[in-house]
Every structure is written in C-alpha cells, then in structure tokens.
Length: 85
Image 1 (tube, rainbow, N blue to C red):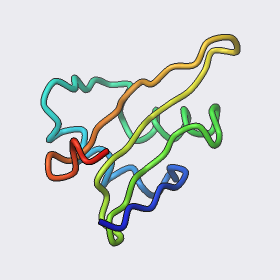
Image 2 (cartoon, helix red, strand yellow):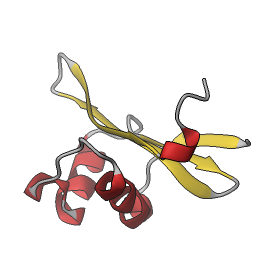
Image 3 (cartoon, one colour):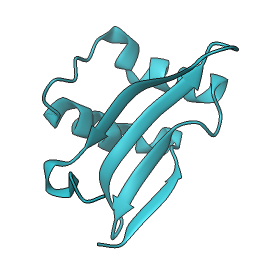
Image 4 (cartoon, helix red, strand yellow):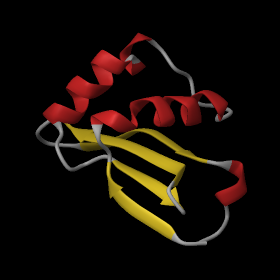
C-alpha cells in the first residue's frame, strides 16, 4: 500500500459521499449534502482529510470544531483497507 493523506477539498465530495454511502453504520442526512459539506469545510479549513491509495480514495475523516471542542463527524475507511495499522 502507498497511502497518501491530504486535506479534503471541495472536489473530493462525490468520492467521499460514495464512500460514506457504502460504509455500514454511517447514517447520512441532509447535513451531508454537497452544499452543507462544502460550507463545513470552509468553516473548518485544514481539519478534514482523505486517504488515497495509488490515487484512489480509501478513507475520509470529516472533522471540525465549535470553537472549544473538536469533533470527528464522519469517519470511513474502505473495507479493503481496514485493520492495516
């Protein structure tokens, strides 16, 4: 595996949303729409990340803060890449 971690960009939304949809136990709602997620990323710059294996999305963490506490809102890893350390 050749995992690259980088900050999540607005352009990543479609890939990230597809990963969220295939991830069991992750409940999606209206706040996970493209518009809401892009707004969230703008309010919380540099806090959300994607993981890529040879350029293909294998993980994503949507993270932010309320000014005092930090939160991981959505965290997903493709089944093929789980338990890899």
